[in-house]
Each structure stands twice: as structure tokens, then as C-alpha cells.
Image (cartoon, rainbow, N blue to C red):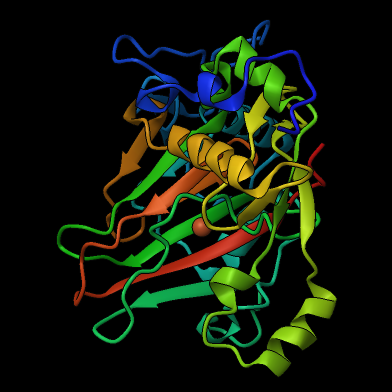
Length: 313
Ligand SMILES: [Fe+2]
């Protein structure tokens, strides 16, 4: 055992039912002491108690003034995922909208899916008979980077008649609902994240080695503090987290599996059934997402722009 806290040993901390017996599973949507004020520039319609709201009354094609930006950012922090239905926007307008939140990322491993060679920040995710959806593992975007994503803006271009929904999970609520003993156990623990097990599949060794120099393994705290809300958030995910630093490998893996399972509780989730023109904007610092891959051989075409965030602490 490498446990250094006074908390009980890991098996006792985990317990049955992934740590939560059936019964009411409630959590706070915003941090304690948060100044909740009405929104004046658009309407906000929740789609679930903790996470996800539809924003109506604005067009993403229009300019965003500072007051509107502040309200949209506040809505993002409070609801973690915003849905803008039926937006008729160009690639440039999509990019301009996202750029209000920071510098845009170009993805090193899915370059071939970029539709516009001059718009490297726009990742076109096109699924069809040959290539079906592979984003059906709970994750937060690009946590294998030193400074992972602040958020992503995803636009539906073409969607199946039914299927291809995206689900999001509130990882701050998930953290809040851990037992105090488990929270204490996690305090100060760090995990390794890496792109290679997922994106390295099918790559030859020379390519992997060359990319490794630019993208080494990175370490992030298992519980990060949201830089804008100050809220603690579970920050490990099934797609990119590899191991817990300083823990016995078997014990560390048991801990990770337990933590991954927290995203799967429906009470922490919301779900979007896409229509063409819908845009979802989510906070990658406080959420994970999962794209259901249940529509092959139908086509599903999405365009994603990711905003670079800061280094988790
Ligand atoms: Fe993603």
C-alpha cells in the first residue's frame, strides 16, 4: 500500500455500486457562494438539473459585445454545456465565436479530417459506411496536452435520422458526491495522461517516436481546481489517463476504474439529440463527454473547434 493519508484502504473506500448506493443522487450545480443572477441577453432552458442548457434568442452569426460575452461565459460556467439550436453559421463565424474564449488549437493527430486546408483549427469529424464513430469513450478533450482544452464548440453538419447523440457528464458534481474519505485519499494525487494508446493505434514505430518528442506523457492532478469557478473537479478519463503516479499499478488501476465509473451516473449527465445546424459549446475543464456510436452505416458529419486552456492545478 502506498497510501499516505489517514483514510481507510482503497477497497473500503470504493465499496459496492461504484461507491454510491441506490437512492437520491443530488448535487450542487454551481459552487457554494456563487452569485447567480438573471440572464438578460438570452433565455436559458435547462435540459437536466445539473448540466446542459439551451440558449435561445441569439444568433452565433452576430458579433458578440463584451456584455454578451460575460453572460455567455457565466452561462457556460454554471451549466457547463450550452446548446444553440438551428444556427446557420459559416466556418469563419464558427471560428470567430470560439476565438472569444482564447487561442484555437490545431489537432496533431486528426489532421486528415480537416475540411479546409486553410482552417487548421476546424476538425471535420466525418463518419460514414467506412468510418464509424470512435468517440464513444468518456473523455475530456486533449488531456494529453500540458495545457489541455478550455472548451470545444461542435457544430452538426449532417446527422443520422436517429442516433449519434452526444452525452456530457458534470465532473464537479461527481467529485462533490465522493465520500469525504475518498476526497481526502485523492488529495494531492497525480495521474499520467498520454495520447499514444488511442491515437498511436496503427501508427508505425518511427512515427510514434517522432511524435513522442513533441508530445511526451504529461501529469495532471486527479482533482483539478476550475480556474474560473474555483470548484474542484475530477480530472481523469478513460481515453487518455494511463496510471496514478506513485501508486501500486494494480491499486492505481482499481482507483482509476472507480473514478471513470463516476461519469456514467445518469444523474450527472445530459444528452443532445442533434439536428443539422445545432451547436454545442462545452467546458472541458468541468465535464466529460461521450459520442454514442449507434448509427453506422449512416453519415454523421460534425465540425469541431477547440479553445486552448491553461495548465490544470
Ligand atoms: Fe471529444
